[in-house]
Amino acid sequence: MNREDFPALKGNVAYFDNGATSLKPKCVIDKIDEYYRDYSSNIHRGEYTFAVRTNKEYDGTREIIRKFLNAKSEKEIVFTSGSTASLNMIAFGFFKNILKEKDEVLLNKGEHASLVLPYLVLQKENGIKCHFAPLSENFELTFENIKKSITPKTKVVALSYITNVIGDIRDVKKITKYCHERGIYVVVDASQAVGHIKVDVEDLDCDFLAFSGHKMLGPTGVGVLYAKENLLKMMSPMFYGGGMNQYFEEDGSFELKDIPTRFEAGTPPIAEVIGLGEAAKYIMNVGEENIHKHELELKKYLVENLKKIDNIILYNETSESGTLVFNVEGVFSQDTAIYLNHYDIYVRAGNHCTKMLKDDLKIKNTVRVSMHLYNTKKDCDKLIEALKNSKDIFKVIL
Image (cartoon, rainbow, N blue to C red; front, side, top):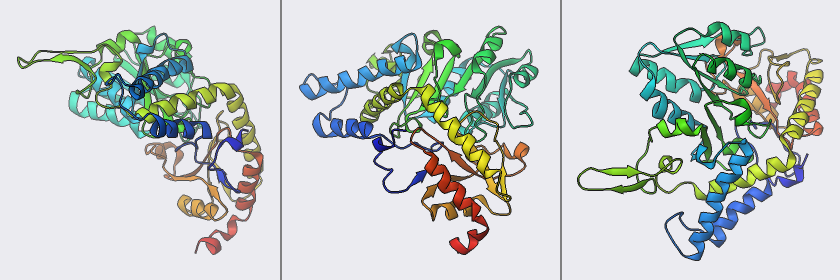
């Protein structure tokens, strides 16, 4: 599916590490190159031709992302360095100011460090309480388990739309409706969802949402923080400097610019923002529904064939995304990854920044296959064939 658009896929490489970062289509690469080659300049700081074009491209990307997420207003779109920055801004720029001692934040053990750690810090520093909703027997987070875990003290539910290991798709819309009826804020990490399924913030009605550009065919070093306009106005910036203030005086007085500009101090990642807009247009043109259907078909094919191999242990065959985690029985996951690299098959091995999942999974490290639109059945066949011969792993890697 559109494999010819991705220059990195030369030869016979099977790239299965999209959960860590996706490859970039030529249009994104060309768009970034065009900025640096033809009109490289700063934004909102010049009236000359290069600067005017930069302003147009950068500011225009905000409207592209608004449309991409179906947000109400461009004011609800803040450009950041990625999901980690966005999620920290939400925790420390918003919730640190409003959560009181013993208020509860509901998390779960299937989450990435970037979603969990900020609230563990707030627990230590501000006296809030972090609670963890249990996962199902398939290691998935269900609405019922969220519902059962909410208490009168719950003020925030923070969760991924799709998790980066199990790959389960949470019913964010249903969870949000239930939470809002009880005055609970909902924070969504959409890093593994954006670019794979349609993410519509108006339909979901979540309060905050974060994602990174590099996982959705865009550049590294750029991401998005979405927040409802009224909440963004309540939020404190984490950085102060040029571009985000109206004035500051010797007497200590100052005034910040309106949202979202007040959250984008200094020179932003201009080329990366412009590239992000191009990636969003590319995905919208292909269609998230088509991408999701393609990934599910490949995962189903992989599961059916890997289950026929005696020494392969699958952990998440039922989840409805293009992520599959497994181990070769008796083999350390990193050794499996080294073995697969011998055949130009690129996977991720480790705990995938989800270090509490081991409590449920009963194992620390796994091999992760995570797919995107350019993966093919041929890629899957390469992986299947290599794993059929996995009894010879140590002959190959030693």
